[in-house]
Length: 130
Image (cartoon, rainbow, N blue to C red; front, side, top):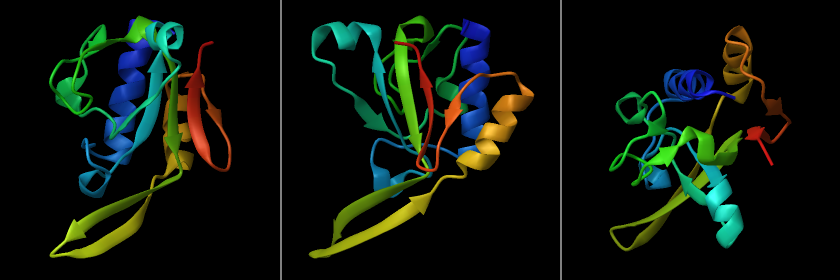
């Protein structure tokens, strides 16, 4: 995957799935991702909405956007986009919760049009490079 492909991947995600946010109850999209750097450190994953168009540059996801810090495309090792994600929040002292669907079938079709290689299952669409 080169930088041009990554940029097209994220632009397609933004167009198909909608804007992301750092909080799932405010987000139209959701994903988990890790980097090669993080795999060497603690093998953890971050979770947030997908970056918006303003966050997507030629070589990285920009600083201060939905993902909160910059991520070079070349460092992304794995990204998982679930078919649905659950959210919860406390509103006026009561628990409010729900589920949002993400149309990974349409996303997969659009990625195919751009020759972006990915994997889709019943549960997730993913890009995995390790």
